[in-house]
Image 1 (tube, rainbow, N blue to C red):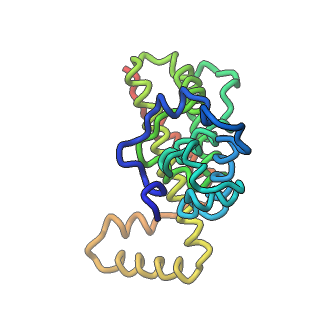
Image 2 (tube, one colour):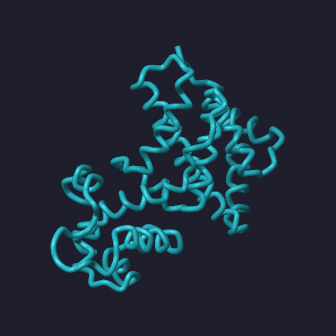
Image 3 (cartoon, rainbow, N blue to C red):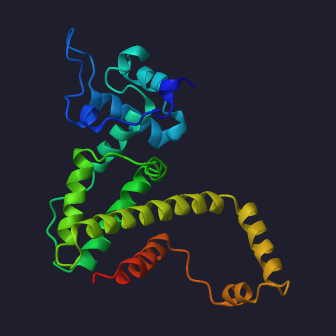
Length: 238
């Protein structure tokens, strides 16, 4: 992997990234655009994961020389910023709010989960600091409007949105991992036998009691809703 395929060493300059047009200032009209490059990278990540997204591979997808891509995205870290913001444009921001901030915040959480399930690489891409681009900012504005009925100050509202996004990203990452295990019944059976043995060893009485309780149906949507309700219903707005 080249240095430019890795994360930038000095971070992404948000002014350079978001306040410019994304095309070279000089020379002949380019045969492709920053949006086309980003779309190719998103398609590649959706199909093969973030590891498949290299500058060389993306250049091949758009039919460009790899060096020409650096005018639009100087490294993979910048490309990831563009990818995150582009898929954030799929999030609706114009829908009416109910005025019940908990209901509205839960709806926002469900929208985020659906987006991350469509783009399974997104939770991992959000684990490092990202500079919000225009689409991300539009959704943030929507979330802040949902929190207007609370007594939270501006900083606290931003913290709530960050907490919600982090929760959804972590949950979806776990959900994807669990689905992968479910596709391997031998692994799932081995884990079940292991936990049963641990529960029976007498050293984990709390775990044994928890495992003996009736199991809930394996419904990912219902599980997410239950966890989300606990998070948002417990938020303190005083």
